[in-house]
Length: 158
Length: 158
DNA sequence: GCTTAATTGTTATAGACAATAACATTTGAG
DNA sequence: CTCAAATGTTATTGTCTATAACAATTAAGC
Image 1 (cartoon, chains in turn brown, orange, yellow, purple):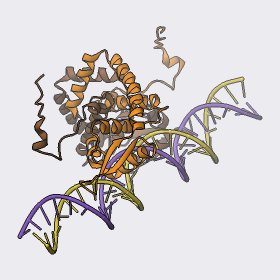
Image 2: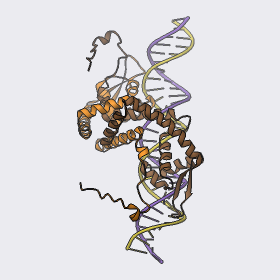
Image 3: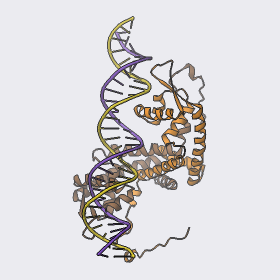
Image 4: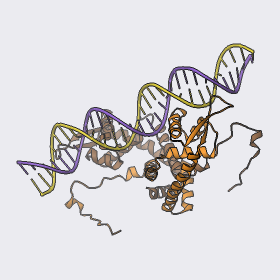
């Protein structure tokens, strides 16, 4: 890699506002992980702003679509969400007419989760938006090969 | 270490509780990023439990040590923390006797941040703990080469 | 030099998010 | 049948982030 400038005559040019030494913190794996994650999530938020959809809500819709009829606890558990906090989340999606809770006949305690027709249509649009974003991320990484390499490395940390 | 059971005749044994289809969500880059980040941070928390140190506090100590005499706003900005929220953080470290705020003579508004001798000693211990954790993460990744590859890929997302 | 704008640290406040406990209803095990 | 567990729910707490407002001080414009 290229040689550093090593400007030691900084004091004469900008006595006050020179950059901080931060290599020690930025070299930490957890620090870089967090930065990247926040950046990607921020991007998600801006891309999905018009759809008023947050990352966790998108994953809930995708999960319900792929597993219709499952109960709240099952969906919540896969995403690592406490079922107590999942209540508000599902309620919000239900109020928007995207999800419906059908009282299970087999188990009167459980709610079977389904997408409404509106929910299906909404998810189609969301998928398109997400796929565009995902493809852009893959481009940034350099291609599909790099993506798989990244996911593999991330899994080793988990 | 034994081999998995691989019971594919699930339908006859457990009609209800089979695994959910989650490939669609787990394939999302942002999802995997978040999982890995939470896992690494959780690990940090457990490793630093005895030192009662959180990730952000560690990075603040490291930054002050590398840049003594800087003002709060500068340190906070590098870490992406609002200066309003940084006040409580520094106050906490000051109460523990690790950091001191010295009123700057040049700018009577600013506080120059320094580590106390206790802070230096504490940071030495923290560095040792962190280095052990970092080395373990590198081992999990497969080595230094893989670490650099990961950091490079993460940067492309940021 | 004087007036005005910007900076610094601070407090207060609000919102998002996660974690825990407790509860009623219902189910399943022994 | 009895008792433990599961399910959804509410309430509460704590943590973290974002915003607004403020006093003191500094810098900029004229």
